[in-house]
Image 1 (cartoon, rainbow, N blue to C red):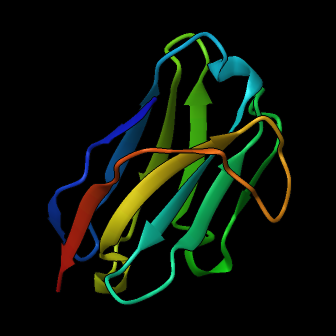
Image 2: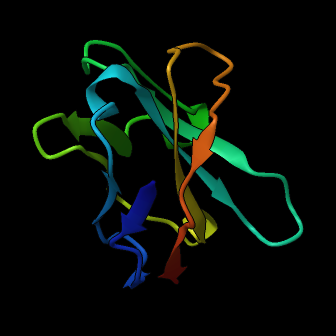
Length: 119
């Protein structure tokens, strides 16, 4: 089970860190990713990290502003978001898979956390 937290209303230019807590004993063997979705639009890939944290990838739209990390002791993945823009407003989901690949094909999803960026 994946549970996201940390989403809230912020102003443009602010920073925010989202967390994704995983239950179970397989977290350290699974790649983790963040996606986001705006109502009426397809879910968009944001960032991906390998099971060990040695590899990662971010979408062009957020490169230089967002970064993904993980703590395998805490079974938690993070999305650090800086210089937030109104167009970053979305529901953010974390997802996981046994395989670190691009495109990523997750088999587990969280419920999402709302991030709203006001101008």
